[in-house]
Amino acid sequence: MKLKFHLFICDACNRFNQQLRLLNKAVKRLIQTTESDNTIQLSLEAKARITSAIESKKH
Amino acid sequence: MTNNVNDWLSEHGDYLYRFALARLRDQHQAEDAVQETMLAAIKSNSFEGESSARTWLTGILKHKIIDLQLKQIREQPISALVDLDASDTSMDDFFDESGHWLDKPQTLEMPENALQQKQFLSILNACMDKLPTKLAAIFMMRDVHETDNENICKELNITATNAWVMLYRARMGLRKCLEIHWVVR
Image (cartoon, rainbow over all chains, first blue to last red; front, top):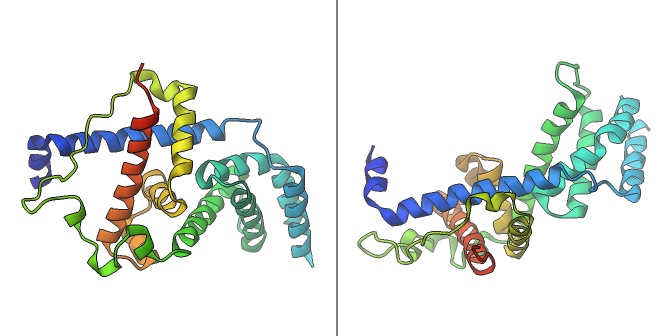
């Protein structure tokens, strides 16, 4: 309740809050863009290395 | 189980890699996170098919990413991140004696469609790269993964004030960088 009242009268705090929300939204959008970019793939070397690590777990 | 894991690597490896890369922002760390996830999947042997393999693997990967981010932060003394001895860190950096902001946040002008613009996202990407690795890691943990503040403080053995200062510096660093490089059209 105290916080709500403070935010009601504090313009700078409101701007700070808005900036945080905007940054948060923007970074999440950046993450989504990378996640949906199908041109980004594990390299063949990395796949081979991971496969070899998996195989070594068998023994 | 290892046969399943080989199949999972073929089917979901690239997706998991993109998921990790988007959050760790480092190719080698993202590859390591995928490898650790696959090895943890073999070890746990607990996939029961109730969710999809991708969902299950992504759940494991999320933990691996947080572990790597905590490691990134731990590698440097916290005092070096807040530029002060940990015990001396206080809110005084940001507020005056009467509790008012020393450096009032200004309005960050941004058009509605900015988040859809490639140029904006590439500037944001560059700004993220400019942040010190550890500050970027705490920002991602808190604001993106929404990791509990209490857990962050416990894992890093820091006070809530230290965490707040680090987070504030990360957020303000990003904000400042966007303000400088993003020209509102």
